[in-house]
Length: 149
Image: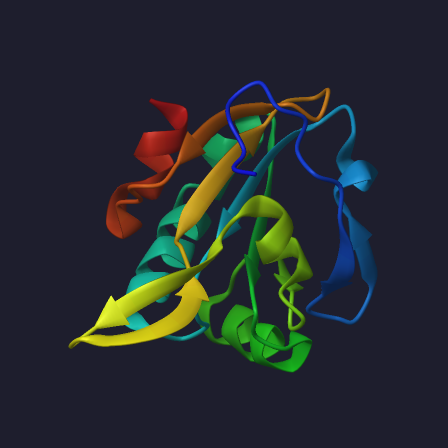
């Protein structure tokens, strides 16, 4: 089942970079930017995270909570946050259960080789937990503009 605008965003429970439990339902009443990205400390993912970091104040003013999520470990997320001075939480989804729930763990191909990986996708979720927007053509260096339009 693929998610669509208007669907209730699947609740999930995982851990953040500090090993603390984190659930989508913890943010009920707030607007959430849940962005799935392939890997910590890679060029595209760093550009995307830094664009969100550099525009974090504008996102907060617009009422958003920002949560990044990848299949990297909490320890990897911690290093990424420290290295890039990220002001938001990153969720460790090592078992890919959240990716599966959101349909972002997909077959990809590079140089003719097929493999499973993360589809870079952002879900904008409203205060009621409904999906307001799905951005699947993410411009890593201009991602905030795509969200705030």
